[in-house]
Length: 512
Image (cartoon, rainbow, N blue to C red):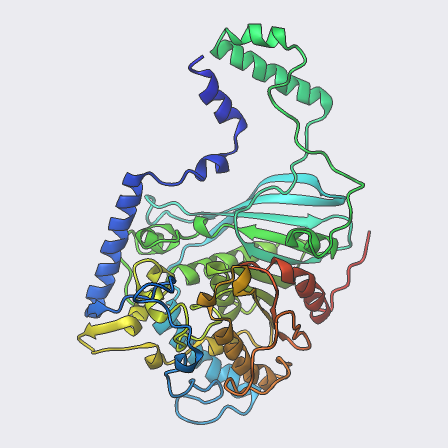
């Protein structure tokens, strides 16, 4: 019987079941050591002797995060969105596009998210599998895609971007698509017919008996038993998706497609991985330089490569492709929307520092949180300067940053940007600083108005405007805000985001 149980597990359980067991203690120790070495190398390159430790999320800890609004804004003022570095005011769209936007991109690339290297390899996309499925009662075609990075210059590192595209087939195309950071999978794989299913079970029984002859007596004892159970079949009487349904189902019901892209297949989410993934491939396994890209910019680059493929698919309206993410992937979604102008809309969920929340704010998550060894890999190495206590260049804080998140949101203008948060009581922690995100969104509205778009419909003074009560939908413009009554997710806002985005993109679902 020794071979039976391992074989049964290997044959029946999906790979993701094993992945949940995580790393061994030895693997975790090795990863931590590699991360510490990479972090130390960047500090050395920058001449940093001491970084300030980040605050604790535990309010009873001695170094607990600040949640006192009266001390949350230590910096004199925010850098102005509509003032050039030479002091001149930006008064026209032409000056914005030709001068101010390039200035802001340069600052964000150098000091915060890093530059894209000139020698990034080309990506070749391949359709691995196509499956016609039903998601509830909605017919869809699902495509499993792999984007292979040319690694001929450094074959020891392989990068294959994993992506899944799901398009409803009961509507006239092409359709808008929302790209989402997450783990790609077929939504509802088509099942074998009865004859094929019986052949699968017969072959499986035969394989088990060959592995362990004792199994024959058991199968003879239970002749009707099938070791492989059939998956769920389409339910044509299932209710139509509503606001409580998964966001993917709501998208399909509204005539949208969705695309899931795996960020970990682009770049690992740890410091040890910076010498691997797409960053490591470009650097041929060497450490980064201070202005090299971090994981957020790499994930955003990967999303742009995914959009390259979508532009070739006739079922997709490539002018109506959006980007979505929550938490660290909310940061990545905002970076994607800001730097890649081909994305038409972004749903930015609970993104915190490095996303929509002001870096200058000292409330919950801090700059020092992002400069520590646990999160620094998201950012360019130069960002570490702003958590420095002692160095060859002195001490710096978030107040010394030349740019901040309100300007990152402004880089999205005049395209659609939907900022989403939940509430601390349900798990969208105060740590994320919802107030700081609202302030940044308010100020970013100045760029939207300059470019002929609508913002939140309030002034652009962050100290004057108060964050509205939860469930207040500020959906009248291309810049939008809503705080739902749920936790660390954007799921409750899909029922509001989809009609808003469809209206703004002038998309109306038309059945076949």
